[in-house]
Image (cartoon, rainbow, N blue to C red; front, side, top):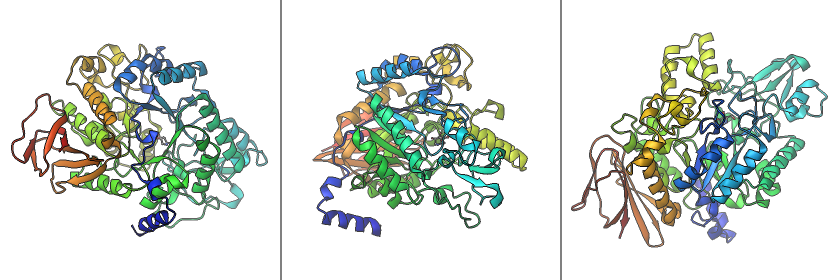
Amino acid sequence: MKSLFMAGLLCFAAGAVYAQKSNNTEWWKEEVVYQIYPRSFKDSDGDGLGDLKGIISKLDYLKSLGITAVWINPYFASPNDDNGYDISDYRAIMKEFGTMEDFDALLKGMHERNIKLVMDLVVNHSSDEHEWFKQSRSSRTSPYRDYYHWWPAEKGKPPYRYSLFDVNHDAWKYDAITDSYYLHYFSVKQPDLNWENPRLRQEVYDIMKFWAEKGVDGFRLDAFQFASKDIAFPEWPKGWEKDFVKYYAMGPHLHDYLKEMHEQVVSKYRVMSVAEGAGNTMQDAHNLVDAERKELNMAYAFEGVDIAKPEGYDLAHFKKVFTKWDAEFAEKGWLSIFLANHDQARMVTRFGNDTPEFRDLSSKMLTTFIMTMRGTPYYYNGDELAMTNIRFETIDDYRDVAGRNEYEYQKKNGGDLKKLLEDMKLGSRDNGRTPFQWDDTKNAGFTTGEPWLKVNPNYKTLNAAAQEKDPNSALNYFRKVVALRKNNKVLVYGKYSLVDEQNPEIYAYTRELEGKKMLILLNFSQKNASTVTDKKLGKLLINNYPTVQKVSGNKIVLRPYEARVYEVK
Ligand code: NOJ
């Protein structure tokens, strides 16, 4: 708090306080971003994998949603150890996804529909099949040696580093060719790039320019908070391993690199930038996104999305976390707002209630939350249909390198495999990656071939085609709530105030801007719940129930998972 206060004072002294206000308008604050996981979105050629032509065939669907930008997970050449997050050529399209002509057509089709494209920039690491790494590992004197982090074996074993995706949890891999270890925070096929090397940095900026020249509208910086490292690789105090972010994030030169990237690339194009992760503290987050620092536009902070646990979560905690982040960024800086992505299980399963009775209602309620909070919304494909976790019974059904390698690790180390499989039913990333459910034909209309990951059997009734026909579907509600956000700047910039804080079932808040005020009421429980309001309610702007219940007096009763947005007079 103190440091924020100080920062505020300094800013005021510089006469720049107004220029930094969060409610300063910027185009990237007003976007509604829809995330496409291309592998699972739509397959056009029957190989069981989604592809760019598949996305092209769904451009009118995207337009119909009302979203204004799309973030597409990596579509670059890759051996796919981590579904494209291991890139072997940053200027080529993954062959399974199509060609550069397909990409150009996709971008053109999006721009014709006024939809922006945000690409994934995966440069904390590359693939071990990237030419840089092949050269780097070939000899200790290769000009590419310093593109990665190497530890010569004659120095003994390197200080232990934990790897998120490694079968042995070990981030150092011995490579016999040069009798050295290389560093990989993720899988063994994702060696970390050495950002301390200015040549490597220049390569990345050139890659960014290549795509910016093509016309992409933004960059999502994958795992970038880990890019800068103390390359002396000191020993860390015992027990640090699980506190990954604290030790790994925000290395010594991270901000220098972001400033350099901003100066060389971002400032020269009309692009938005978003970091995955926001460091360890509020100050870290501000240091990434505060406008006068000229680094990034916004970041995804994970505290919110991490609230949902296999055993459930507490609404009081949920309110507290989102209220805290809003307060910290009320005056300065900007964040994204989201409850799911391709690294999470399904939103409705984690945060709502995915039983047939409450699935659509609770999903619509969560969607209302995302679209009425401050921050740029990022909404994950399939959530507009209220797609649910698939809950695989056996490890053989999983495809994700993280889950499969964790299973191997536990197997080798006497872990409780039954418990792990139970946890994966709720938490595995593959739950969020099952093919998009387009209709009730074979494989949900996703592919005519064998899907790379099983389709959720509930597609027979839960699919886009069925929801198109139903005016009360989750899909049609999504369109309405997106339109509500786009038509009301108060939902983008307005001041947020929590009301009825102690209510254990209802999350209620107001948004207020230039005399316009809205009250958002969200029942997070599966029973009726009530709140008392002192506000003079105006028009009911949106409601996730097909029938409206009149409010008499100042007590409002919300039905299970009900969401309402009122104008306040
Ligand atoms: C974060 C990405 O979102 C995730 O899918 C990926 O596995 C890791 N970074 C490594 O790139």
